[in-house]
Length: 136
Image (cartoon, rainbow, N blue to C red; front, side, top):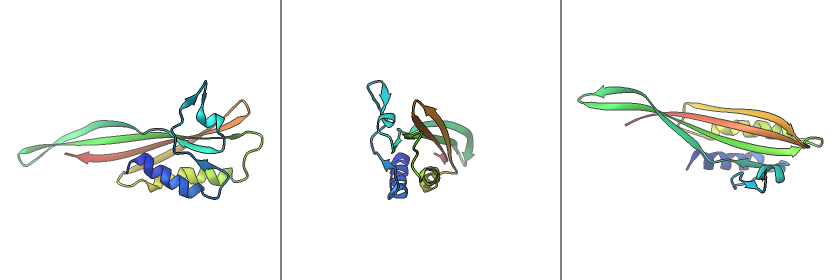
């Protein structure tokens, strides 16, 4: 199961019974606008981006071993009416932030939320970051 799948499953469970739904679609553009601005009160999660970098090389007996770091980033979006925000928006934001804890086998699980008002919409942008160390 990918990190995106794990996050989507957790967010779907966490937001059940709230005013915000969850879309399994990617937040692509429809016309000139991102889908999450047209379909308010839905959580959208973008594709996972990975960056793999070598941390250091070691020797194990007569063999060389490379230790590398895999950093995965994902971005999630929720758009709501800025003037009439849902009553449970604080709980929703907290649940989406805490969904980072559902991802296993990583040593860094971070999520930062940024908010901005665009036209008459309040946009919540969730930036997830996960770091894993592997060797070969």
